Length: 167
Image 1 (cartoon, helix red, strand yellow):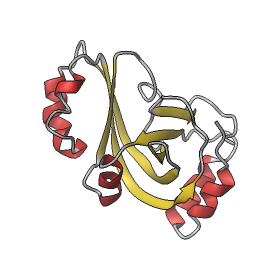
Image 2 (cartoon, one colour):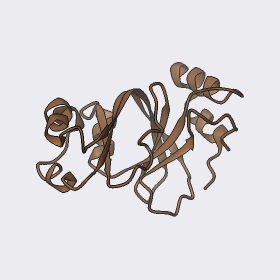
Image 3 (cartoon, helix red, strand yellow):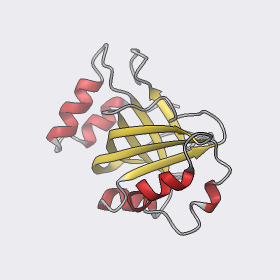
């Protein structure tokens, strides 16, 4: 999978915050993680409108973004079977082992901010891990193609622990 950094920068040139933040993130040695998250509707639109302020990812395995996302990381937003169409800042993040943190407590604390449908929680009952991410500064951009072909819903392009360049 290849994403052209210059294409993303070109799309944010009228957004001073993102232009500066992305430029800082791409400097050698930056500790800002960069992630690609796949979103289906209506959740993608809810992120852009500000109705959805917390993203949640539940899984049976310890997989991204669990343990890989950090406060201040950048999340590129990609439509299911579509292009990258936005980005958002991970203001804060929490990782939960659901063997010790009841999912009901997570629902009570974050449910409204997740903006999920009624059946959402029932379909997460068998999850063992949860990652919650407070979203900030959601920004829609002109589409950037991305040839991602696998079924992962989240890809850590550069985790906080890595220092190599993102292409």
